[in-house]
Image (cartoon, rainbow, N blue to C red; front, side, top):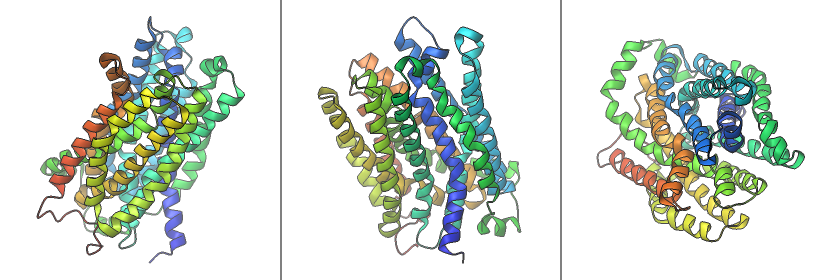
Length: 430
């Protein structure tokens, strides 16, 4: 058995690319307003922002395709090769968004090229989370799978914190005008500079013993993967419902926070970014704690508790916040939602690796996750902006989160119904 040090190095190598993927997504969400003015000029600020957020969401529409094609590639050729390919595609999308001139220079070609960059990022991200989660599950030590898999999400929080701190620094060094004109591009360029180092780190990955043992017997073809996915499609749909709560809560408390804080609470960019940094730190702490707890008490108690608490508290908390807007109150509400996200996600991601058959584990996980993100999670900033507009209710994002929690509760009850044996996590199951 590999030493703890060896396991730690393996975790770092595999989640490094996951860090970059989330960093790219976060900076787009953070600077959606500046991107709107650069690439999507319109007669109204609402229309311009909606176009920018819709482009953010469009990247998620490519995730199911990436999950199917790249997931099948990984399930056939191995975890290591597939994760290197996803990193390359992700880097191409980031470079495109960072370097494309604005609408004033290129006209309609500018937003189209940004859209292409987002679609490339989305296609690669469609299997990145699944590939990383499955890799971590397959190298985990007995009885600690929840803890190991939690580092997939924890690495994303490191990206949130890094992106937020970078934003805080830029807002300190640059004027609002400079940020709107060119300063928002700096984080994307930083992402481009990180790429070579992550390539070197990820190339040193070793294939998982579980995949190698199976590959010596049989490597499923694309046709076999598709057939198995078809046979298990009900499981994929249930998994998708399980994921919705995670994706909606995550993008609500991270990518959407700067826009919500500025446009609805009328706080400064600095205040909103500082809250986002604190949320990222909070998520980073809660995820491995709750992943480890799920190894001890099982997945179901955490999933039920988090969804019920979200249904009961999400809208009242946001309603109170919008009636009493301040930096401290925003921080309090976001930290509560962070606790709910960490509690749910710490048990959810490992559950998703456990319900999928091994021969299509990456494809099934990635497809379920991608469908949830494409239909709900990725459009959370746009959906919240739209709901606030049509309902004339600044607390409307709480309705969106409560609906996601209802889906998570139903999926938990279905997947953990009496007689269900596929999901593990209680002490007896190891």
